[in-house]
Image 1 (tube, rainbow, N blue to C red):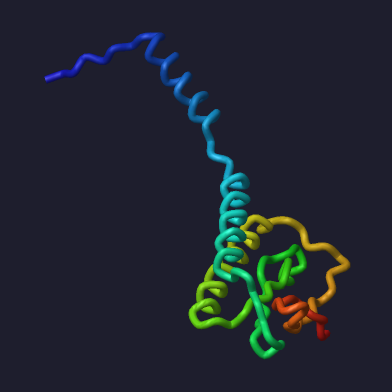
Image 2 (image 1 turned 180 degrees about the vertical axis):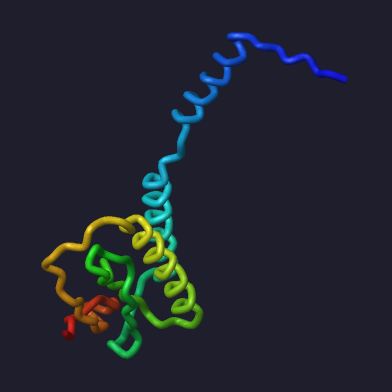
Amino acid sequence: MRVPVVKSRSASRCLAALGIAAACVTPTFAEDDAAALKRLEREIAQTVGENGCGNVSFCRVIPMGHDLCGNPSRWLAFNNYPGVREVVETKAAEYTFIEEDMLRGKPRPADCKPAGKAKPACVNGRCSVGEFSY
């Protein structure tokens, strides 16, 4: 049994129109990544909260993000309350992964310097990023 093949110009026009429409609705990943970074920043800020401290022994700092040189784009200071560290470290790692992925394929600058490690500080009753050691 033979199946008839229908050839029409309208069918080819529809396929062409679908191809053009598909090209017009390609997702923009940069916008999605930027929104994810903003969301993670909000979630980290909520988790960290007031970030109070009596002295520096309550405070911790972790690297967060990724710049073109492979260094952290920022350091995050937080109070080591029970359960906070695990949440902050997980969200900071996710933030770093997204930022690293956004920079993938971009050239590394020639003047890259190694990043120093930040030290925690307790300033005015709040955990903050102190000086850097190189």
